[in-house]
Amino acid sequence: MKFYHLGLAVDWEYDSDFLQIIKKKAEASGLETLAIWPENVEDISSRLRDQQIGFQYILDRASLSSPEFNDLILLAQKQGTIIFDSPEKVHRAADKATMHLEFISQGILTPYTIILPPFEQNASLENLGLDLSPVGCPFVIKPASFTGGGMGVIKDGSSLEDIQRARQEFPLDKYLIQEKIEPKILNGWRFWFRVFFSWGLIQAAWWNDETHIYKELMQEEITNFSLQALFDLAEKIQRICELNFFSTEIVLDKKNRLIVVDYVNEICDMRLQSSHYDGVPDRLVERIAESLIDFIRGAKASVK
Image (cartoon, rainbow, N blue to C red; front, side, top):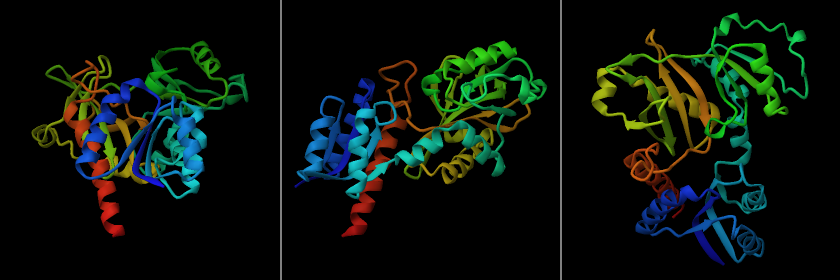
């Protein structure tokens, strides 16, 4: 049997740079990797089923969006492979309605939110006693699950008609109606952050919600603006969602409150800033890859 320390399941062409970084760092640490794309997933599944190959870990960045990977992931799990992250945990974390309730029960500040049932389950709003006054106007409308890349999100809702139109886009999904949070602005900087958790490592970056441009958050800025709580929040969120790799969006509002506005991004966009204007700073991506390899090396050493 050919054994791989890490399988890399991907279905997005723009993940290529991230994969190359991981493979390079793995190779330098003596770890074997295998990339799994839609083009070869059936063949690899067959080889795995016949026990021609095996995996210690699989980084799954594909099965949520490409069902053809499901058999591979389930088969690998049955054979004892650890999946980053397991489909069960990913689906739970991806449900913003579930995460919202978990967050507020743990004292995490979130926008004021109204959770609506799926349109197909309850099309009319009349019997829900909907009061929009607490969320203000405009408000944010978002599906609980289908929000990859902002899909389905309306940032300037203002009426029941807007809500109904949005609900019909994904009629099987719950919807969140949320207070629109405005960040503190200082010297032109919007205090909107994306915080990455990867295998115990926490990193934060400025992220402009209007331009989608990142800037690495420096230690001096963390100290000067008292932003250590960003890291504490990420730890708390990880304990709730139990994912090894995710990001979250946190805003410092005009009242100097840290509010979590986008709960758990379970499949992080890892395009490099050096190649894409709205990509993640390269150093952050490098360190994310390092944290994965360090985790695997640590597990490998503990088994010896």
